[in-house]
Length: 233
Image (cartoon, rainbow, N blue to C red; front, side, top):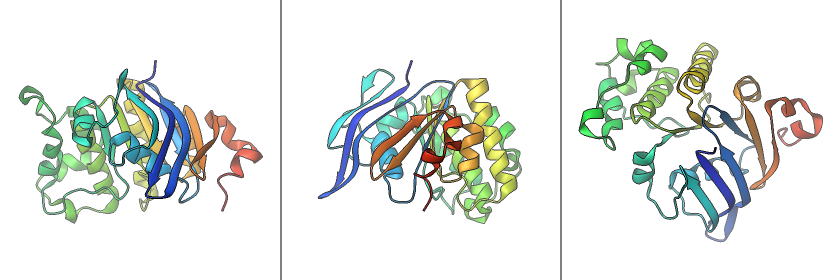
């Protein structure tokens, strides 16, 4: 069963075509990794899925419902949580206030911070009263993921969560992603450039080149020479 199904999707920015006939799935209890060089359409794919950029062809289905022109806030309320590249936390709000922004799409009874957010990222509990902008880059990334988890998602979408992060926190983020897959059966869609990170985590891999899916396979396929050729500069 798929939580997310992308079928023959095209996406344009004006006259420029960023995605061409892209199809992919994300399933519960699996980590799906999207790889590719810079500028091949990875972030455009996530923008299409989360509703930040309209598609010009094809369909995107989430939880058996076609998303069509569903705006981002409705997709978030339906269970798509997005951790954007660059984190985009609120630097002048405290850590607790940043986490509370995830309450917006929840019923009043559900407006609490789940315990597993602090179990996965204990530093957030220690820094609840600190402003988001005072955190290190790695801590801000943990905050951005924690904020997404507050929404109780069915699908967690992460855009290059290791970018600019120190190795020790990359390992913490990797363990958190595995835990969310294994313990909660969450569907996780991960865009990454860090090949080893994907190889360790991914159940399913898609590689984009010039806006098209050129490889769809397992993490083991990343060791094949012809596959790696699509990832080298």
